[in-house]
Length: 147
Image 1 (cartoon, one colour):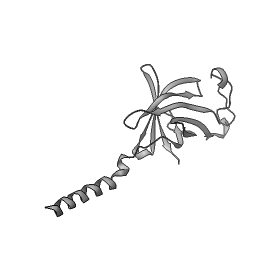
Image 2 (cartoon, rainbow, N blue to C red):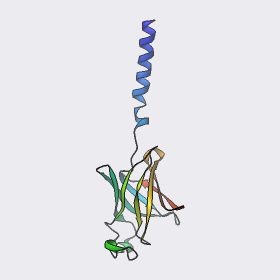
Image 3 (cartoon, rainbow, N blue to C red):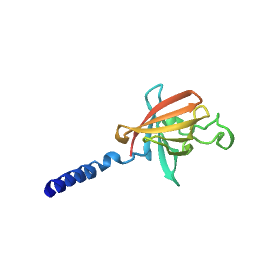
Image 4 (spheres, rainbow, N blue to C red):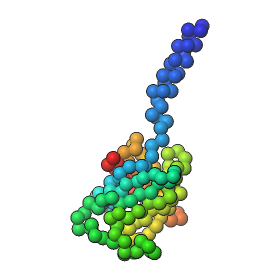
């Protein structure tokens, strides 16, 4: 009887430890290739970092050489006419539940609009659903992990 209990406990321990990665939280931290939801073409690379439990994202590379010097002409306040390259476009995002990160904001530098943002890693962290919304209206983009 004792041998059966030990074997059963050993089996459950092996299952728990081998599936540990299944329970690991996948974060949006990393480098992402942004994909335009209208054209389905890659636009830029955004690096998402975490500091003090909050995520932020900065435009690290613009893929179209003709847009390297583009500025956020439609932005408000201190971001007005700032270069898009190097601009922080995601701020104050924190973990919510079920692998969703939210509560922060995302700026679309092409139109100067700021949206509440929700980030959801998908496909084992290889895709990032980026949902920007104002009230009941929202836009989704699906970014691809670079690193």
